[in-house]
Length: 240
Ligand SMILES: C[S@@+](CC[C@H](N)C(=O)[O-])C[C@H]1O[C@@H](n2cnc3c(N)ncnc32)[C@H](O)[C@@H]1O
Image (cartoon, rainbow, N blue to C red):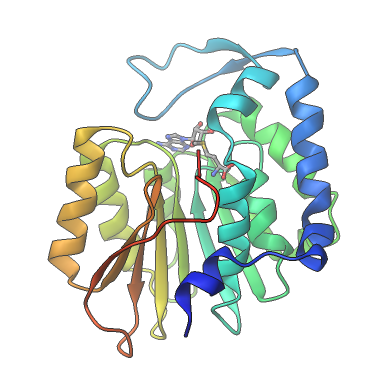
């Protein structure tokens, strides 16, 4: 498998499939409405809501289109991707993942109810909405409630609460929900802090699977056919 080509390749057909997502982003970027954001993640010292415009939040927290394209491409490494996303935000990453024909189901978790409402309105009006289950709760609460026997996933996108200790904990819990075939973890913001980077390294060392450090994000591949190597990947355009 040419992993680089599989992850970085893009064409006009895929652009067309994903055009509605970038239109959604453009709408959000123009929206100066201020909403109360309750941050349950690394940026929070208290659960007091912060007043932030939708535009500001889109700029600062939504995944860039470059990462969205990689997420879309990763789903095509599966016949049927069954995805768990931690951190829905406004649904941009969720939409890239759900738009792919290879995606069978996607469950996405977001605790901030105002952020969740924006994602829900967008995602549930799409043709692929029947693949999507949205959960408005914290990661820990939601993960605890997922039934181990019925909720098996092969693709995990961990993108919220960027603290090293939290990452290790979420990763450990997610592993209980692994389906038996090959599976992939995408972890965003591995370079967000020293703490996040050392947690990423710890996961790579501990699990000794094939890992890819793509700068902004990391990918861990659990697939017996792949060697236990640590790769660095440089994309044709930098991911910001
Ligand atoms: C970086 S954004 C996610 C971006 C999104 N995945 C995308 O691709 O566009 C992180 C989101 O995770 C949510 N979050 C952070 N910590 C959380 C927690 N402990 N439980 C639930 N949601 C959380 C935040 O409210 C925020 O909306």
